[in-house]
Amino acid sequence: MTEGRDVADAFPGGTPVRLTVTCRTTRRGGGRRHPVLILPDWSVRTPHDLDLERIAVAMGGYVSCVELADHLVPALREAWLRRRRVVAPEVRPAGRGTWAVRDAVRGCACAGRTYATAGLAAQHLREAGHWARRDDLPERRLAALLTAFDAAARPVGRSAEAVGAVGRPGLERLWDAGVHPARVAAIHAELGIDGRLPESVYLAVATGQVTSAWLHQFADLGPETLAWAATTSAPDEDDGSRRAWLDAGASREAVLALLGGPYGVPHARVLAALLDVSITHAATTLAGWVDAGCAPCPAAIARAARAGGAARPVPPSAAIDSVLTAASAARPDRTQVGLLLVALQSRPATLAVVRRGVSTLDEYLTLTTDRGGD
Image (cartoon, rainbow, N blue to C red; front, side, top):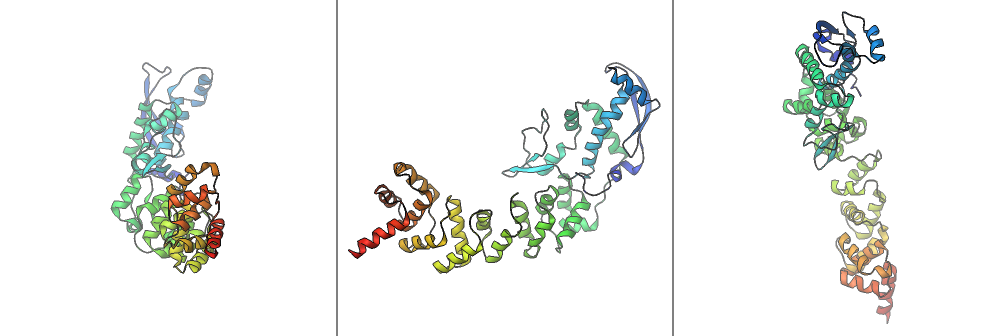
């Protein structure tokens, strides 16, 4: 996956790279040395006829220059394009602040491994060992080619736009993570925001976690919100619900719980009116119910809150689990147990009414009303 820069521009100096190699017809032993040219189109020119030698290889022979042209140079190209940051970083978040190589190679050090930073994961993809293991090639020969290319290459410039987008230290950390300075400047321009942005914004876009088009909707909310949105997005998240919740006044913590769930902003508005609280408070309440694994309607939450006088009518998930376990014979519904916990404000009291056969909030409220009438 290239970043839109011409792959040929990554070739060292834009001119052929001249090397001296040992040409062998056996995998071990000596051979004669001669020059070769690796051209900017990644083809190889030798003093002898590679096409004829390919016929010999097809018949079971070995020619080191055929291996060079047909296998080592393609692997060199893969590693080199990543050293020049022409290819987007092929790393992904792996949880708890760690990173992993997106397409790990069986038998390679990256298989089943996580890295402390995106830079360390991306560095692995710039090393000869990864590509040698992927293509079953001699690592020493591939490493020697990369060293020759390093010597022939010009430094990659850092434009003023790129430096201004994230600061020089941040730009260097993004370079370590595999992000080209030109890509940093392009993302900054796409987001259309003045001033510096956190590194996490550029890394999230560059690694494909989010698109700059989706992230742009948060540009007017400032760098901190941009970074939050960039690093907490979900693959199945729709285009507008996160912004709608933020505009309604929901906290970021509540938004993350509510995204993709059963509730929308209209539910929070209804609950806020019923409880006479802010939409922020109502959204936090709904988020608490989602975290508890339940989704009662706002009217039911309000009835339970009025019955129990709860300031925050959200049942602890652990308390629901406890009642469900202790009253398993009654097979109570999880959501109804949660509503009863809010109404009764006590686990023992809730367990007692469930064991007496009360299975819903409405049954409990009817029971208490009847008793009050007596």
